[in-house]
Length: 139
Image (cartoon, rainbow, N blue to C red):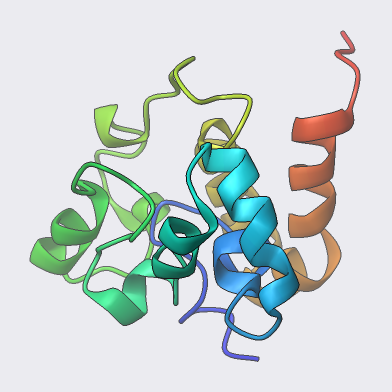
């Protein structure tokens, strides 16, 4: 698996996202519809190949991504490689936080930098996503 190609520059693990998983298994399409509160027909159009494979465009997001053009301009692969990291492009927000794990971006990027992309993808990415959605807050 080409983890670089299916990991967003912002640290999102596309390969664990239902939008991406629906490419191989259409059973995820109703889950996309439910999560995004859209029709199944709209969800079929929301299937995603990952932002690197779509020039930074994510079919189920209503807005343009600011990260992808930024890393292209700077000729880097991931945000953690930038001297401005972390910047406001990675700022966490409450809006949609219960539906999409965008607030894990900086954490994932730090883990990618520390562990390396392959190790993070194989050993940590899925558990970060699972803890985000189902874990209990700990101090």
